[in-house]
Length: 485
Image (tube, rainbow, N blue to C red; front, side, top):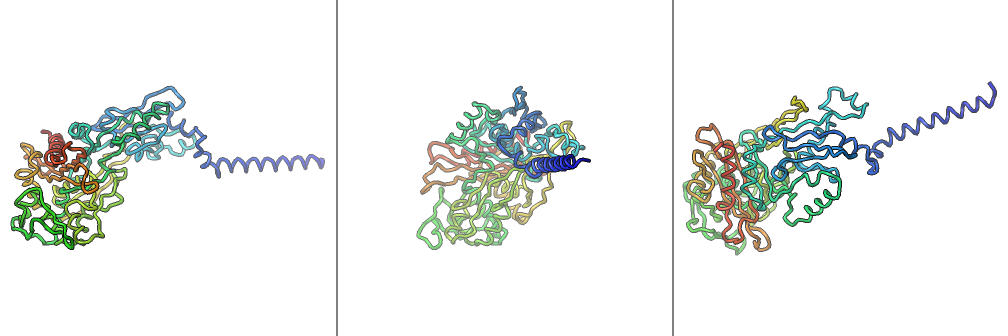
């Protein structure tokens, strides 16, 4: 072979090797950077080339996919969008996704490996499986009752099954229609700007992402701590509780909204929500036991998910005795989500035990075959069973003879606790109206539902705001819906 041919062959071989090396560098080493490059639209085009799986409530889809005929072909649609927005969130071609649309995105979009029996072949073919469906735990009638009860006012409702932790209702108002954000045109951009600029924050999920001072509804936790610690051994015995109560180490005097709280028994103080009794009880119990009880109920838990994350409810563990007194009546730095306070009511209803709440019953393939069931949720012992029995009595008395009368349901036993939480500079804000409760039908073996309601703008006249007047009627209708009454 001529010398120049050998050299040409060697050069061609070298060039081929360099070409293969560069191809490997681009397709393997730099594949991630190319895929993530905003200028690369192939991933987005592929993502929207098929319908998205659906989110189901009561066996019926509350989401859908519309064929736009455009390059990003399928666009998300929603049925009763504002009603279910705190659960579904949005899936937007411009702004990503939130809540179930985000936490279950792999399944809904068809990229979850569990959807396909031929994962390797689909990877080679670069073709996703058809999107799967997400079956929620929501009770349609309870969700509708909560939304109807809030009637657009700023507030939230959370309802759960005390025995299982299944979330039965999750509502936040004012709400919005996620469909407005689905596309990628000027309308979606305008909706995004309008919703983010709205001072009422319609995209804020107040049920799980907003914390509030729980006010007197936190007295359920304080009562549990006092009973478990043995500070109270007889709920009908008078307590050593002055009225007004001077906060320890200060000249500040705590008062009550009603008369008759001096030395009131725990039963009487709970029914009529005596601040002085519960503030002193918190101090008598002590910070260590108060913090331990709050933690058992779920406060200071940074890892709660349903499956999307829930804001941390907090009970301050670095306080003096005066601050502890205020913390024990749901003020100072004590803050809770409505879902957390529903968990408090559920623990009482379920004999002192609770399970972590969850929103997804199961996920399925398009034909209905189950991909995954609900995660196992172990029972957590929150308080002694005997304490739970006494608290159920106290909560029942609060409805039958106390401030929670608007939560009563004929044909059912209802336990509840009202709360009116001060907030703002020098408590100048319109108080938040709270009601936490549980209900058991007369023919049911156990309580079927636990509810928490908070109303931010309960009334124009701050002096007329009350958990019993503003929040309890909403909780009553949600409980009636679950009980079938």
